[in-house]
Amino acid sequence: MAAEGFRVSGLMRLSVATTSVPGDLLEKLETIAGTGFAGIELYEPDLTGSAASAGDVSGRAAALGLTVEVFQPFHDFEGLFGAPRMRALARLDQKLSLMQQLGARTLLVGTSTHPEASDNREAICADLAELAERAAACGCRAALIALPWARHVRTEIAALDIVEAVDSPHLGLALNSFFSLADGSRPARLRDIPGHRLFHVQLPDAPALGFDITRLKGHFSLLPGQGGLNLAGFVRVVARSGYDGPWSLARVSDTARGSRETYVRDGFRALVSLLDEVARTEPSAERPVPDLPQRVYPKGIEFIEFAVDAASRKALTDMLKTLCFRKERQHVSKSVELWRQGAINLVVNSEAKGFAADAFAEHGPSVCDMGLRVSDADQTVARATRLGAPAFSQPVGTGELDIPAIKGVGGGVVHFIDEKSDLHRVWDIEFDAVPKAKATPPAGLRRIDHVAQTMRYQDMQSWLTYYTSTFEMEKAPVVDVADPSGVILSQALASPEGEVRLNLNGAGERRTFAGAFLADQFGAGVQHIAFLTDDIFETSGHLADAGFERLKMPANYYRDLAVTFPLDAGLIERLRAGHILYDRDGDAEYFQIYSAPIFGGIFFEVVQRKSGYQGYGARNASIRLAAQMRDRQERRNA
Image (cartoon, rainbow, N blue to C red):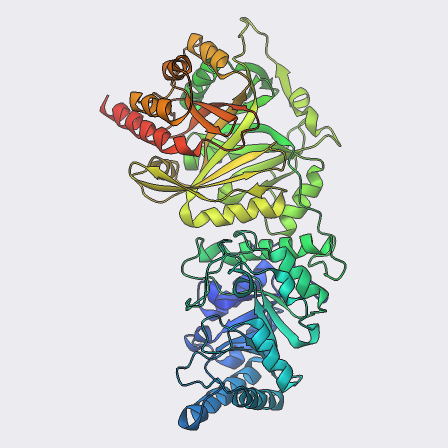
């Protein structure tokens, strides 16, 4: 999705490798330019495999406002003798000629992996000095990047030593944050690199595992914010050096989870968000986007909206009644109802026209909209759209509020409610109170604890980047959850104080419960909503009285629970009788009740957190999934 024609301006240059984008090379350029980047790392095989000439590529890039910042890769040059050296020089001349035709600025030179490469420092320096001279003669320059699997020069400090020994304005250093940080090294060790020696910086992320990468033969590349490397510290150190070159996204690897179709869009969001966060506290760092609003602190979930028809409306509202929700308000002019308990607002939309009707036509009964409480709704939309999210609007009737909104990942809508205007009074302005013929006692549900969204494996990182670049949210490590028919990946996100909690669940196998939901719903979406209570047993009693159909748990689970945690027999029995799941972390406790699924996979959860429990009962996830698969099979056989 193009960032509404927005392009980073000023001195800061953002670039992305063409190999990360699908399509023919000229198509790649269109995609990159439409997303917001102003520069590219041109991957030579993309040019070699294209029917377009170097001149065609140069002309198209210029017409799109793109600069060829880097031409790459160029390897196995220095430390060779005899015929191998002559071949290396011939390859260099051919690359430099191409660069002239392309209008490329910098040749990215990887330190040699050639088995015959000498470790003689004088020979290496002499070769790279000649490379710099030939580059200068062609109006280009070269950036040396230390490959951790190279024969001899494997670190940035060793590469810098060579660059300084050559001492040419046409030979500098390139840094790759993965190479620098993945082994657990701290960014501060790079603080003595002078800015004028630094020509190019790549900012891939990776899991923070402190692993040895010397035997890797390619990048392990995630977008900034998707891994655990200290990229903010890395950017601060580089910025303080006086570096004024491009900040780039290196090529995506085959092992990185994510979709190449969304990589550039997500990459723009991730790169701008990282550089903007650093610039807000680091005077030497430049803002990538002028006047970009800060990341938004989500204060809570204001509402969840369901798209239904007449039949599915009855099924949904019947279940809400067993959860002790009450229909409190009716829209003044539409078939839209507000069901409420505590601070939980659930909207049931059975309109025949409009966005909800379109969502129902595409996905069947499903969650089509989520409202978040924020400090400034317009500012939230401004940040999201500047980072490439499409704004959302639909016709507003007489007396209705125009609530700021964006289209989220997967096509759902996110509305934003603040208290700066009348937005927080939407329930009073657009809805009429419904006379209560019968009082419905609440079950003790206070607020929405978390919302779980199910998606394809390859889309998880895209959703993660969307949320973390727009909102102040912290991510937990990815958890593998065993489904009886496969594996599901789960990524938890939360605002710093837990006002908004989201679970992103990646599914692949059609046979898994989550995979079946994706297939039945024709795409990603909200699969379950968890409500918070202060007393799980009191709530369980109210739900039983209301006829709530809960998911049944096997007796084996409670026998295992009795030997896993120091719980007395009476508590175990209360848990078993209520089909309540339990988890513990130190003194902190967690209780869970699940509803039977409706609409082929959507379900509700009731939870209690005690003594500051912060997780989601991960140890119970496989038990819940197995119970849901059994329930699904029993319903099919009934």
